[in-house]
Amino acid sequence: MYAELRSPNVHEPQNLAEYTNTIMSYKDNITYLWAGGTYIMSQRGFYPSASANVEIISLGRIEELKHFLRNDRFAEFGSMVSLSKIESVGALLLPKILIQALESTATPLIRDSITIGGSICTPSFRTSIASALMLLDSTAEIRYPKKRIHTKWFPMSRVFDKNGKLSLPQNALMTKIRIPIQQFDYQYFRSVGSPLTDASSSVSLAAVAKMEQNSISSGKLIITFPDKGFCQSRDIDNIFSSLQFPCSESHISSFYSYIITYIRENLGDVSQLQEVRLRGMLSNLIDELNQKSISPL
Image 1 (cartoon, helix red, strand yellow):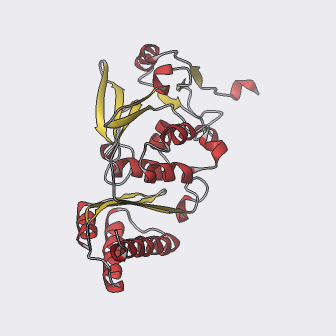
Image 2 (tube, rainbow, N blue to C red; image 1 turned 120 degrees about the vertical axis):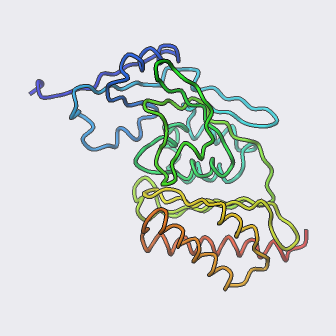
């Protein structure tokens, strides 16, 4: 019976130097990084392993990955900081859309275990946390092995390819996430459905802008389909920024049609329920901006 079990080897480095030694020693093996464990433990067939050369590197004892730093320009979190910890220390500091994205990801109990790095680097689905960080022009420090260990800062948009899949070097480790502290006149976030339990019907929309009298400037938005990827485009942002408010229903319909066409051309077909939910979110976004445009400052 026990001869049939193929147990992964588990490594527990105490610091980044030990992690480097471990990853360089096993860089030709299949390597899994254990952060909070919420993804690995949910995978059917992970244990027993189908392969004999599987390595698990637990990151839980690496204190460098649990640090938090802030100044006047940015907040920086180690990749092993939990979502609940970021919520508590960042409630009055971080942009509202990021806090809302964190809260929408899972229940408070599960957010105690999910790490910020794990939520970004989970390969099977995309979270609204990653898309909010992209919208906020966040960056991530990545360590990856070649002949030696390299360290490089990546814009969050480059952590993923154009189809929303992780696009990091092999055996890469995300060590820090740096979030600019920015002021926005308008922030919007909505998420419907559960990205963890029902990814094929879930969708979220995040947007930021600076308000002018009857228009917005520097408007940006990003749509997340957990099972597909991200919808973000400079052309979409330009159309969004060019809208005049109050905005008519015909303009909303044209904007929605353009976005759906872009999604189908770049991400493929999404479910009908996701399309309906997205239409509702876009209408709600425009309604809020319409209301702001006619309200006294």
